[in-house]
Length: 69
Image 1 (cartoon, rainbow, N blue to C red):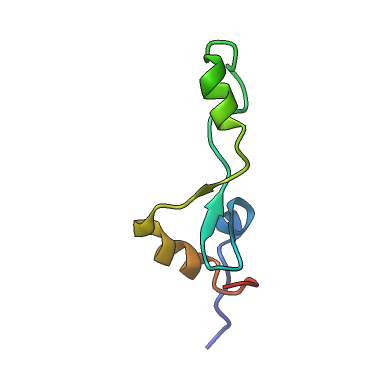
Image 2: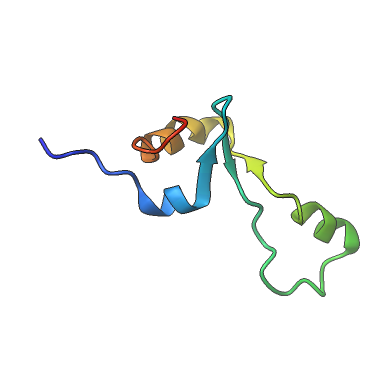
């Protein structure tokens, strides 16, 4: 059997913390920020958001060959 490969797109978008939480960056901050109010822009500046519980198992499977999993 060949080795199982990690999902490269998930590897770039997600990371696993030391406690086992899966973390991703906030979406919607690339452009069209002038139409957003200050509160939305401030909240979108947050570095990371935890992945919802339903997708944690799937995300860890995609990142199976990475560190901290």
